Image 1 (cartoon, rainbow, N blue to C red):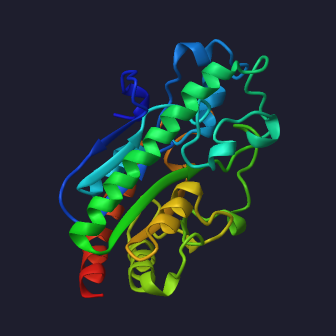
Image 2 (cartoon, rainbow, N blue to C red):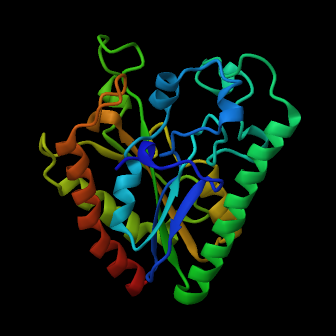
Image 3 (cartoon, rainbow, N blue to C red):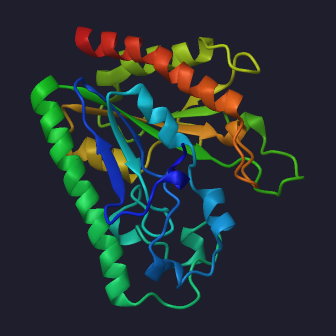
Length: 268
């Protein structure tokens, strides 16, 4: 089930904790917004969904420890710095008008408090993983649009929009994780997707967001965050309808990468 099926809770994320040095996160999978926020919004539900990362939560099952965002990034974006975590102007939100009028300070404060609690929880989680395993890997799962011109317009140029982008720019020292990154990319390139081999490249357009940057800053010796941007070839980005064959294929591709990741991290 996608994140759109989660019930509204006070906590804006879920954490499933298990053993091992691997965690998968889908912090933009959420779609829900709390009623007091939704009442202020100019953007409609379909517009929100188009810029969210639906179904990425499904893929977190490849790791024993899983973190899933439950709320829409239009309520509070867990992948942006605190001062920009709530989109205040259209230039912060792909040119979209998010709010009818200004946001009352107390409502904004409640959104930011939840964002702070999330980062506190991630600090506790990662401290625990660092103690237990020394080094650990975070698979930071996202998706991106490639048909912004409209449902009937041609897709964005594939030369500049790989099917999977691996973001590693936020790493303080890529060489410490090079074996894992290079093997991961090779394994993804070798996988037989529904259309055969697909385009997987590193740091094209996206290099990782604030969540990865924060993690690498706070845990420079122990954390390796690999940020994924999956082109929305697994769904119709205008209707929100998924392609089950592609959803399963991407999940299987990630699952097949896990043994290599664990082998590399344990041999380092």
